[in-house]
Length: 252
Image (cartoon, rainbow, N blue to C red; front, top):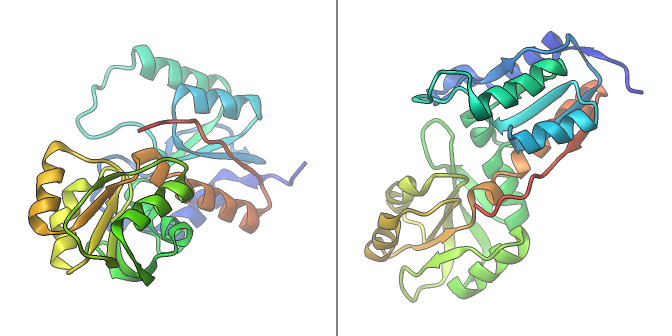
């Protein structure tokens, strides 16, 4: 059994590492649901769904660390239905819920974009946005668009949706995990050959073709599995808590 750590000590370390105050986010970052004060076991995952909560309860976790938590801007406020069941399970088992959204996208080492780059073999040269969300970089060697699509599919375990931007090969690449298809024009301003995000919208197809950029929608969940896992592992290494990353399958 690992030695316990005080919750506030862990939260202060996470705040110092991720610097959530730098971001204008769509949800509160940090502690969202308060549980027990001492932490021995920590589960990380992408979204605080009922399935992930149940798996964390089964493992007897004290803290659930996710990328997608609760209380989103514009979300209905009544605690009913699905929201009530989720919160009831957390509170009944005194499990802390901690969520980091944009700060986890932007972190240069532990973040979703940095971790995706490691797996795809992308070399980051700079940030896509001024706040550090998304990255711009290059491949060590140029690939055809067909080869890039096959590579992404092999690494992530699901074929991406590929929209051709022309007949050119790919060397310069921009990427931003999750629902970042709206940043395609921003990627074009960086002069890249291809852009990778998680989701695709109807207009994204036309934008990619007209901007002459190969576009790959690799999956919202698929591109954001690696940041929460890396952050949980960081907590375990720094504080000696037990950590388990639990992946709830999601085709989106």
